[in-house]
Image (tube, rainbow, N blue to C red; front, side, top):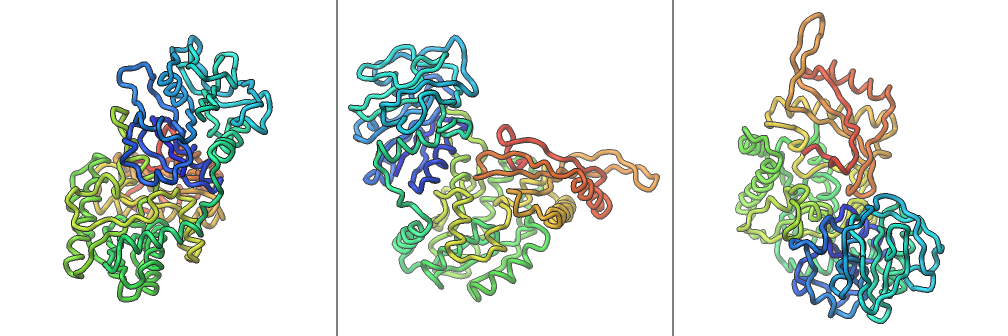
Length: 509
């Protein structure tokens, strides 16, 4: 395992993606987390300290556990991580007279292991306002740029390296090679982490965790919960009981589809619970996005607790939590607030009666799909676009009402139908509709209207950590808009969201 300590960089998840792409396992933890609390240290091959928004000389600057320097494994510091290394080992970090953001020409020392196989002049991505002003003892310079005389440093004897640039960003030419050099040449990692090996290891872990107990599955019908359910079914068979909760926040016709598909797979162990009224009543009057997510999380658990009492003997709850859910829901001590909580992370009650089983919690979305294909799950499930755990609640801005949900479901269905007709569904990461909490004036049949606005969102992404808005053809946008306004009563205006992630998120709430 490669351990990544996150100090708040927007690129931390990219470090993990680059390592996973090499079939090497890695995990991300808050930068100041106690090393003693981490699992898997016996398999630790190296540590990467991420970038961050803070300054190491600030009184509130986050620092790693001092014990990381005693583990005897190679350490690579990136940007803020390099500055942490320098300051810890006696160097000096100061504000840079000229901040460096964007591409920079960097001269590298080819004799060092970190830069083996790359050019003496490289174009690499910089993003920093501080720089190393004094070298720590025992280190030497292995790269420099016009603005950064210490663009990279190394202490080969201690196996500690620091780079001021970001090799994980795609803009860094040969950045991938630099990461490969660290994990393979310096850390001596092996390409032994695949979906086949993951299945073998995870099934063993599940069987050890669960034993002969029964597991209750929160099956939504989406990619994550479906893959998690099939994974558990493969591991423990009939010990798994799948409960599909009809909370009224699904897509149009989703409940009927789920009953048809999963009823065949799980038979009598598939149970459908009608909880639409319960969820709507709990969400009545709530407009704050975080409150919505937490209410949905709590209500899910309440429903499952109630269901478990009927079924008896259910000691575990299966959830399709994936890695981005966890990453976006936690933050290091003293850092900025997390991006947003997730219903299956921040919304769980402290006194939940069942223990959690989360077979996907260290996988990114594309890895979940790969796992699903390895498990022979039908393409109609695996190739579905991602759908948020809280469902249409995060696409219904403002108070959630049955009227707004009905409008959104019909509009969203039209978006999906037209995207499919244009043969773009499989080429787009996510495409959906959002209902806004405002009404606008319009005119229909010579009469004044005052109705809701629907926003269309379509983005492309590799792993949901970053996303670009899709430039849908004008003709397609026009057709979608025309159909929604003509076919969905209560809507008189359609707009298109052209925001990337960051700065926006994929979902509106």
